[in-house]
Length: 127
Image 1 (cartoon, rainbow, N blue to C red):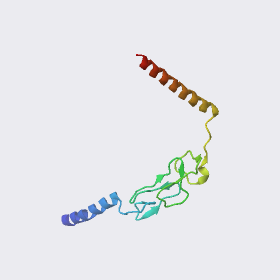
Image 2 (cartoon, rainbow, N blue to C red):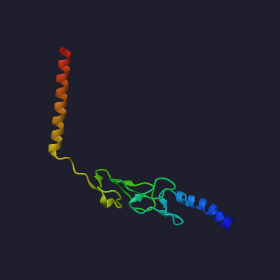
Image 3 (cartoon, rainbow, N blue to C red):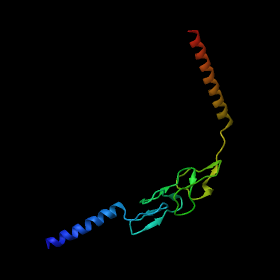
Image 4 (tube, one colour):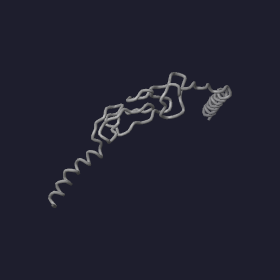
């Protein structure tokens, strides 16, 4: 009886280790569902490497409207989205231009930095 239990244990241990590590070498765009096979990543997600156990959500500024993909699509130029896992190009909205006040603030800051640099350079030459 003891020998049978030992043999069963020795047989099941390697199987359990294989199962814990993922027994399926799923292709990019798929993940191992741990129930006996590879499954396509759903829309809004991707898997870029072989043998992944889960899909990753698309990053902000990207989307994926097709299942089973290895990368996400970038929003068209001049657009972005604000959430991870976007599943449609419709989530990409136009990027609003910076308000005029912000542009003036940047110009004033750049002028101040240049003026300070010239002042310090001039002062260093006098010393």
